[in-house]
Amino acid sequence: NAGVTQTPKFQVLKTGQSMTLQCAQDMNHEYMSWYRQDPGMGLRLIHYSVGAGITDQGEVPNGYNVSRSTTEDFPLRLLSAAPSQTSVYFCASSYVRSSTDTQYFGPGTRLTVL
Amino acid sequence: KQEVTQIPAALSVPEGENLVLNCSFTDSAIYNLQWFRQDPGKGLTSLLLIQSSQREQTSGRLNASLDKSSGRSTLYIAASQPGDSATYLCAVPDSNYQLIWGAGTKLIIKP
Image (tube, rainbow over all chains, first blue to last red; front, side, top):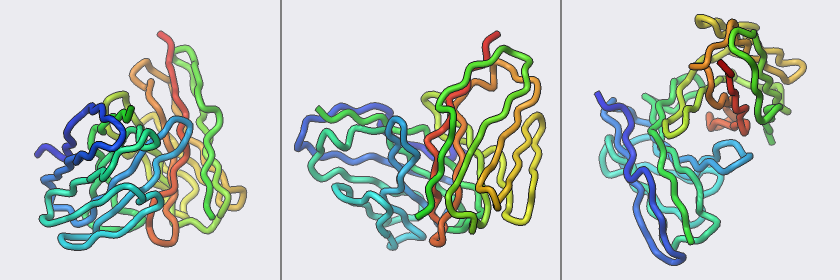
């Protein structure tokens, strides 16, 4: 049981490049989400999914796309990277979307956009 | 709009001391409050969840309290150890069950 895995751990992009951050979980969780964490700020929700085929926007969705074709995978796509997207990205999952269900986090991807 | 604040941003204490981390929130109509631990290069780990009807929750050397009326929660760590060094974050869910996060307190326990 690997929990929540994220790849890559580190990535450097040039402005305008695109890339996909991978997230996978093996706990059969329905709810998955992407956060970004910036210095001096709390985590902010980018996108989330309550099940395969269903996605929705969070607090800061601009510049990012997601899809959920399977229960296990929830990739985050940066369409045209900007320096403002330099951040640490965390993927999380839980059984369902609720206020009490424990969320499990991946180790994060540190992204730098030059 | 709910806002969550954690002060101080960093704290350094000698090993063995008891310490308190603070979390404040602006809207007292919360379902619960959670405390997480974040280690460098690793994801976040849930430590404690306090329901809105509870005033305290304990796990080992950790004790979290909740005072909804004043919009405050504290995380008490007893007999601190170097292994407790980490960043501690608190979060509350909004009406859509999305977590609203504090920026965290970076704790350093000096041997």
